[in-house]
Length: 140
Image 1 (cartoon, rainbow, N blue to C red):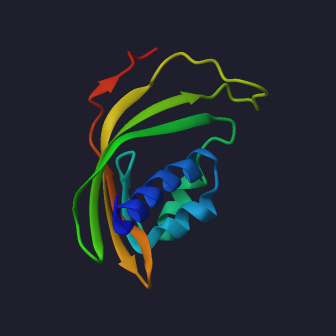
Image 2 (cartoon, helix red, strand yellow; image 1 turned 120 degrees about the vertical axis):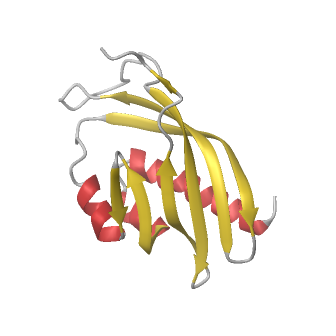
């Protein structure tokens, strides 16, 4: 893997790790200041819009976005376009959880599409969007 692909791959994987670990300041630094994140049916334009949306997330949820089959479709010295499968495992009882969360299965699987650009020597996410789920757990 060349340096461009390795750096872009790491930015995508770290973005979702930061999301799962509620490390929003770190996550926002991976997003371009004018980046667009299509999230849960809303267009989040820029870091402040993303910060506002993240501030509404449940403090008691435990969630993991499992990113797999991450591939680069196109890249050059300053741009990279990637896609991956995203599997979501989530638990939220409404109360802080000690120990392991119950594993009841994967909530959904979808494709995610990510565009990155090199800005001031750093790879930043300029656009991220998810397809509708290709698999989803039955509604409870």
